[in-house]
Length: 559
Image (cartoon, rainbow, N blue to C red; front, side, top):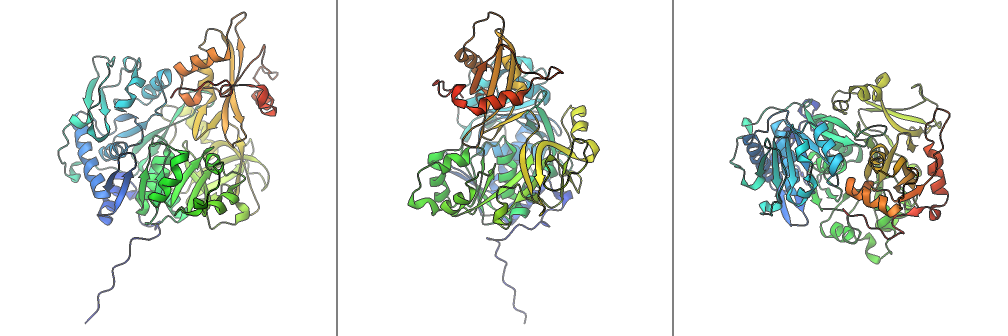
């Protein structure tokens, strides 16, 4: 008589790259497969409410939401704008839109006015999902969106929150999510979705023009997760702590999608908090998290305590990797990893806990299925050790973005000579490790937010007293960048720094408001009359104490 073999222990299994063949790499397929594999395990915990969900519960909830959205006219291929903070509803609606075969178009919740109008109109959103707490962001925006057909107000827990008076056009239907019919719909009644179908429009900061919307297929979006899980050897026992906003690819795709594909779980907080970070990590047994910009410095600068190593964190992704990374590892008892990519393309490299410690600080080596080179201005590969532009491409179709929505010229330019041009400068060393040097493109990276210098300049130029405005990144002592600006005033026009900051607060997202300002009579230019931003940047960074500083002036920017 044969003896039955023991059931395999699935509680601590490394991710298998063979788990999801490319043609099956769709959100509905992965969700359905993982819900069947993990029927009782808590997948998602929402810290600010204490709500917990298994994958079967999320699958059922998102399927009901898909039916509700279809009932009000959301169809396959339709673009759905999203203005929502971190919440379980945010995730469930993402899964619902994906199951409908519709297109998810998340907006930064700090966007307002002209920028928010641009996002929604450029993305051709016919439906907008918005948190009731963010209704005021829509002031003056809705009448400028002739293609918008329905507005869905989302309240956490289905709570009834007061609806402010919204100025809408007659063609926009107003709905409350919790009032929509959510009868159970058979999963086979939902449309079939393919790996190459468009899933997301991810806005990336513009450089010499408006922000661009990168097009991600289902496969491209989920590759954020499968690529990271394979490179970093994520396990089904891993608990991902997510404190970055879900409207960014980092939280939604690099963290939550990673947890989904590897069978791990997610602990979600509304935002990053220095005081709550370690207590939350310890209480919930979190093992993996991602830190951007100055977040690492905020944690590092806290006074050491005996409990620093009392945590289960094993991997922390840092971008950029600070000079004190080795000391950070020792103090908190963990390993620092890094992952390089762009929302314009996808993730390209990983530095892992298995790589040599002397390489810590590099962006690692290309992930499986990815190719990377360092090239000169004519796209010829340069020798190891010589700086040049970082370019990337994939071995298989649909694993990277498919271009910029409604911007064919920009798409062709970025993908010239069959390689995606990142606009970042880097070096490859003799051992095949890549190192980030700096950015060629006109972009500012502040605390995880990509800021378009062009868009800040555009708002500044709307002020009647401004004749010229130049915006650029300013490197600070905490390993981050701040927004710097030099202004040439109209002849005889009175304008103070504080007045200009108040104008900015009314017309742009809070994180875009310049911190450092200077007035000048003229700007340095080349013989072709192009402003030499690098000279202005160098002048600021030589002695920031001599530059007007919004924070030193005591001005607090309103969110």
